[in-house]
Image (tube, rainbow, N blue to C red):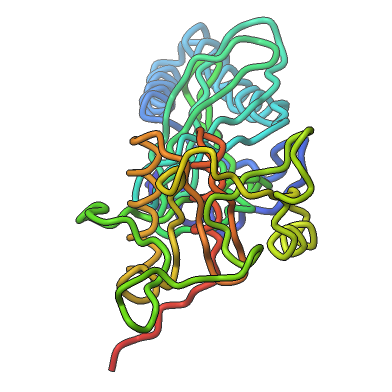
Length: 319
């Protein structure tokens, strides 16, 4: 009954801007609530059968307690404010940790259940004031996540009724592509020339190999003018040539040099980015219409994986 009711009410989840408060709250008795109602009805029947005024008064009093508990459970959930939803980036197919910042009124702690998307309900004890509830979000596709369906439920204060709600809340998150299962045996670097004996040559500023952002004090002659112009047009940094590390100082992961097609190529590049990050290399990424200059660090890893996740590519069905 509970799972059927939740599936029916998910379709009614409205979009809401943050901060948000539940607008559609549903409530049903719990197992303890059904047992409580059956006990009250049995006591009421016995009181009427034996004309016992004290038992009749007790049954009416317990029935009133049940009604007040239902109203109070509804009010507890309806007064919770959601201020922020934060999604941690993960690879597609993994459960993304979703943290929901809520404000719980009152003076007593309560048990609050939360779920994200089609994930499981996760009960947590929250204290009055600002608190965080966490729920795993199952992921099935890469790309930008702009809205997430958040469910909250509680059976406070007596556990006789369970109230729940679903809301579609804005979130700024990204799901990385799934790395290629075979890993990255060879880095897909610059494509080879027609004679297949030497790397393809390019004029100054056309090839982002061995580039880095401009630093104060760099000579103007080291500026890669053509690449810098494209980078500045997209809101990127001014880039200069960096040959301090020698020929092998940086690795450029090139889209055209990667084998495969479509999602396979994206997954292979994702595995190569992970391999370069683990090896602590200076690496960059060359994608259609985008060049990420070689750098190190966690920020560079996130920048490359996000670019791969947001790459507009649709897999064509095979015939």
